Length: 222
Figure 1: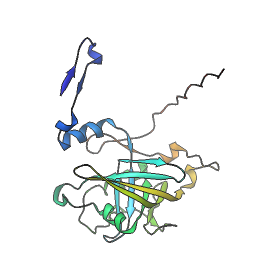
Figure 2: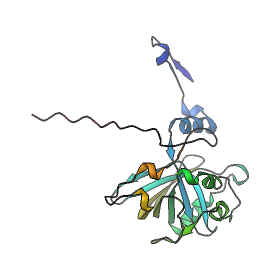
Figure 3: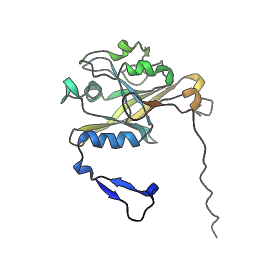
Figure 4: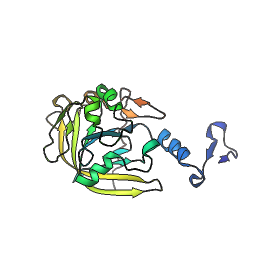
């Protein structure tokens, strides 16, 4: 760790870190505590280990035409350390998964899917979620939440020493609860009411405090 003091005022002073000198826990703390809030993908799968649902906060969309999204699967800890997570096992086997967007009304059920249960435990059933058949793929979608993305696997990238696995999927079917979308396909974010992951154990955010800042217009060309 180094201090960048110089002639800077106290408000401008900072500390910096060579990440190669930090352990896994400190690297995780720095990234997960500053890259916030993060949307949550509740991923439902089916495959060799049976129906499964697990939340991932390293999640975002990455492209359009075709629409693709990603989520990152971290390594198991505790008793299952060294084993691939059930979600990853199922996605590898079937090439399919559903990303269910978690809203505040379903956060407690989602939370029941967080622990690393033994292989074969059906978190969907354990949490009391309601499912419906998907249209284009086999894994079930969770209809309690307002939006579900049916996805077909594009690629799995293995990154880092742990390792982490970045799962990239093409969205082939979208399901939206009727009250969150209008005829122009605009989503009402207040009705969607998603929750985001923050720092520390069990910390989440709402989107109730937001503002608009439009970009400035470009100057007219001579």
